Length: 536
Image (tube, rainbow, N blue to C red; front, top):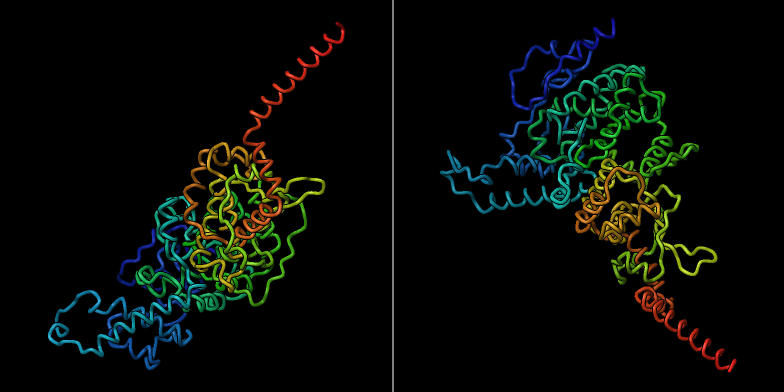
C-alpha cells in the first residue's frame, strides 16, 4: 500500500473540539492501515472496544472503590490498587450531588445519615491524600504567584501543545499536522506495526489520568486522551532526534524554523506528558536519541557561546525516573553532589552587590555549563575571593526555561533544606535567587554584563531588571544558594578586620584622597619652607 493511502490526507484537519458529537463512521477517521485524524481525535474504535467514563454511578460506588470491591473498566484494571482508589474517589468527589447543593429528587426526600456524610468527608480526604502521594509524579499547573508576577510569556506555549492543558488552542493547531508526520517516521523507523507501538505508548496513557488536573481531564474522552498521548510522545522523540541532526529533512526544517519557540514550549511546566511514554517511543525507534548530544545542546544554549567538544557522557542512574521531559532536562543539566544543609539555616540569606563590593568580593563568570557551579573561589595570589557563577545568555526563551524548571521543583519540593531533598532540586531556584540578590538597579545589570555573567542582547537592562525583581519573592531558599551564603558568612567572620578596613576605604575613598592630597600639599609646602630656610 502506498504510504499516502495508509495515512489518508493528513493536511485536512480542524481545531480539536472536546464537546460531545455524534460518532461518525470509524473508517472515515481511522483508515485500516493508518492513524487517527490530525486534530479531531474522534472517539472511535481503534484497536479495542471504546471505553467511556460513566460518572453517574460514582456516587454509589466511591466507598466500595476505596474498599477495593468495585470492578473498574478494563483499561483501568492495569492501574495499581492505590491509583484505582484515587481515581474512583476523584470521580466521586467531583460528581457527588451533595457537594454541589443538588437536593432534587429522591436525595431531597431522604435525610442523609451521619455515616453517609462521613463517607463523603472520607472520600474527599482520601482524594486529597492521594494527590499528596503523587506530588512527585503529577503534571503540575503553574504556581499562581509566578503566573501573576510574570504573565503568560513563561507559561503558555507558542507553537506546540504537549499534553491536555493547552491542547486545542487556535494558535497551536498547525503543529498537530506535524505530530502525525512525526508519528509516521517513528513507526517507519521502528520496523514495528502501528498496533504494537500505539498499544505500548497508550498503556502509559491509561495510567496517566490521575496525574493531571481533574477538571481538565474530565473534558477529554478516553480515546482522545490516548491519541493525544501517542502523537505528543512521537513529536518529542523526533524533536530530540532533530536536535542531534538525525531526523527527517522535512521535520528538521520545521524544527529549525521554529526552534526557539519549540525549545520554549517543551520546557513549560504545563506542557508535559509522562516521560515513560516518550521513553517507550525512544526504545522502539532506531537509531536511538543521543542523550549526550541532547544534554550538550541544552547546556550550551544557556550560554552565549558554542563549544566544539565531544558529546556529554550520560550515565543515568537506573533508579532515576523523571516524571516528564522538563524534569529529565533539569536533572541532567543541574546535577551536582550534595553539600551540608544544616549550617545553611543559621546564616544570612541575602547580601547585595554593594555589600559584596565592600567586602572585596568580585563577581566572576566561570567556564561551567551547570548552573549549580556557584560559590566563592580563592584565586592563587589574590587577596580577596571571587563569587564565581556560570554565565547565562538571557533571552525570553532561556528565561522561560529557568522559570519553568524552578516552578516544577517548587511544586514537588516544598522545602529544599529538608533532609530528603536533593541538591540538584534547588539549582535553578538558587541560580535565579542569586541573580535576584545581585540586581537592584540597571547599573547592577550592566555590571553583570561587564563581568561576563549575563551575556547576549536578548533583553535590555530594564527588561532583565524587571524580570528578576518580579521573580524574587516567588523563589524558595535552595541549598545551592544557601551554601553560597554560608561561604560568604564564613569569609565575613574570618576576615572581619580586613573587611572593616576595606569597607571604610570604599565608603570614604574620596575623603581619603582629599585628605591625602591636602597632607601631601602641606608636606610639600613644609619642604619648600625648609628649603628656603636652609638657603637663608
